[in-house]
Image 1 (spheres, helix red, strand yellow):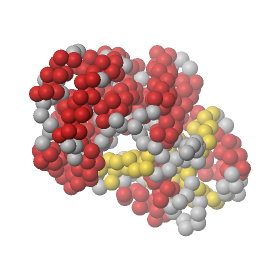
Image 2 (tube, protein in one colour):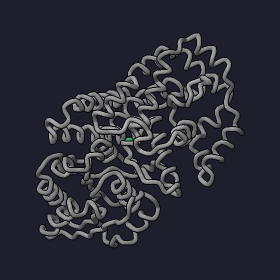
Image 3 (cartoon, rainbow, N blue to C red):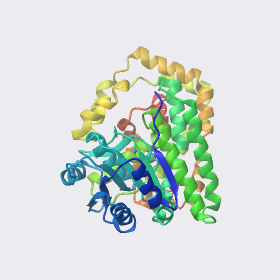
Image 4 (cartoon, helix red, strand yellow):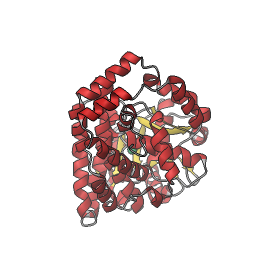
Length: 420
Ligand SMILES: [Zn+2]
């Protein structure tokens, strides 16, 4: 089945393009969802334009700092929404878009995305990144029918949100390596065309970095275009594998922990950038291990004991442990024969795995890219402690089920924190 892509507009005549699209599609009733910060600079102009055309627009302006895409805000949107079948307008960045995507899907409504910042790659995708009862999860909902990315608005987005967009893109180095490795080891479904497309977008974005400030709007256009296209790749794949691997597991772990402990939130792409740096260090370890050592390590590393794994998950994740255990089923229920098969594949594909490791920049290069984009490089710069880093490395991989560099290191008996 061919994936239906949303209509995409990136430019400066956005309100005109939106009006003409809505008229052509005969859409005349809207539920606009935004937050109190974005409303004055982007929500209000959108609302005014559509009302001036005689369209019915109900606006829901969410309040809170931070606004978390959780059950409380989802219920809030549903409670305020009118009964009439309307098209949702998600006017905001990741949080607003993810909530609207979910609500629109579950109320059988269409939605249009009007991004306020080029801060993440999920605008075009169908996955809704939500935090339900403290558990960060991606719920498959629906893609927007259209995306109107207003260049002047995106260019004036807070600088650290734009930097976060680059962080989300640079996370693709490790995400792509993890994805291909998952295909080699546990036969995770893989699409080389989509991987190639994401990789091309990544290369293009890397090229922007050295001249970022020179042609600001032009570069924001290119970044937005790349982020939207990566979202389309996820949409086409039907999951987030083309864009998310071990670095996203770490980022999700931190997001949940910060929320639980009442600590200030950090932009998704900023966390992904820091986590990509950590994973680049771990890919560096792989580059130095020869096949004899791999075979020695595989032979001397026992299969994880089911009871130990479950007890670790219960200790770390408490009330949400059952959901985590369910999501880790493919690993927890692996038979010794299946485990042995994966070990064999690691050994026979070691040259391929090392080639994947070489596709990930060295930590020095990754650090340079992050720094150039205006992102922090060290976890302490965003108040992540050594303990936060350690926990994310040891336990973040339980949050999602793809095979990643972290799962590989565990199978090789290498401590994912110390490398020993
Ligand atoms: Zn991301």
